[in-house]
Amino acid sequence: MASEHFTETGIPPSPLIAVEDGVRLAVKLTPKASRNRIEGLAADGQGHGLLKVSVTAVPEDGKANKALIDLIAKDWKLAKRSIQIVSGATDRRKTLFIEGDAQELHRLLTDRVRKI
Image 1: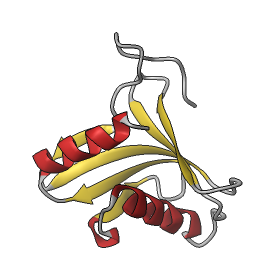
Image 2: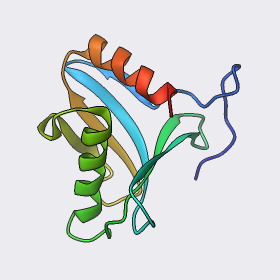
Image 3: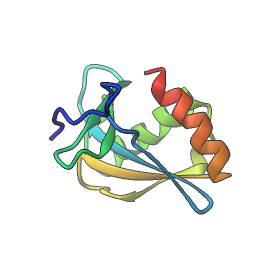
């Protein structure tokens, strides 16, 4: 569950981490929502950053996970094939791996996350 852990600037820490060959993105997914949308940033109980996302799809047969990838790819103009869920496939908390140049992706996605 998200809590009120914020940086000195008053915003939650980044949900992005640059890794070899891409970035990892921490997500808190809400399925069966009224609409598909990226809601904003939050922090978990340990102070780690999360991107809060809602999708209309149900959490059955990977439908909510597919909707999450589709939404992130469309909203951030990324190829769907470059995004995969690396942990939390059956949980609301997930880690996505986005393949590409780590430094370029981290810079680009940090800018997009800040605009949420």
